[in-house]
Amino acid sequence: MSGYSQSPRLVKAGIVLIDPGSAQVRRVIALQYNPDTLTRTLQAQHVDEGAERSEALRLKGPAVETFKLEAEIDAADQLEFPEQNRSTIEAGIAPQLAVLESLINPDAADLLAGKALAASGTLEIAPMESALAIFVWGANRIVPVRVTEFSITEEAFDPFLNPIRAKLSLGLRVLSIDDLGFDHKGGSLFMAYLQGREILAAKAATFGFDALGIGGIP
Image (cartoon, rainbow, N blue to C red; front, top):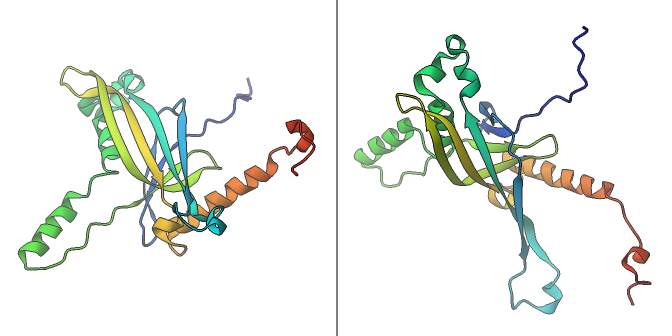
């Protein structure tokens, strides 16, 4: 056998964490299984109600887009080969869950550094800056996001009560140039994402008024 397979290569969805200053990759979080569904919500930014009629068709900025997805993590495959997966035997899927929790938790070292600054009499302590999260869902959807909602349901445990199967629900809000600005690395990624959507829209089939059953707009 040649080993040739016509099956397409599976692309994993996930989140990439990069340093907001240097843009260096800190961590890649690939989902074990790609979710079956991805819910997208877009809220238009219209000019405020009560504006002049001439402003009715104006947009203040890009739509506020959010993603909602549910994913599963399961240690069954790793538990079949305990010698090759010692961390799974010792802690189940707790390490994977801890990585996901790091998306919304500051580092303990940063918290202690803030405590030390407060103890030394520093009057104003800037909030801690987290890594920039990039949501990756195929080549056409690479966009900066903020985690807005995160829940975990642990469904099965080993004899030491380490979780070995869990479902997670993740809510993400896209960070646009309104949030980051044009010069920020995340702002550049958002603009590339927005331009990519425009390119996709240009590929959609177009139809004339006949498709609507009307002769035109008077």
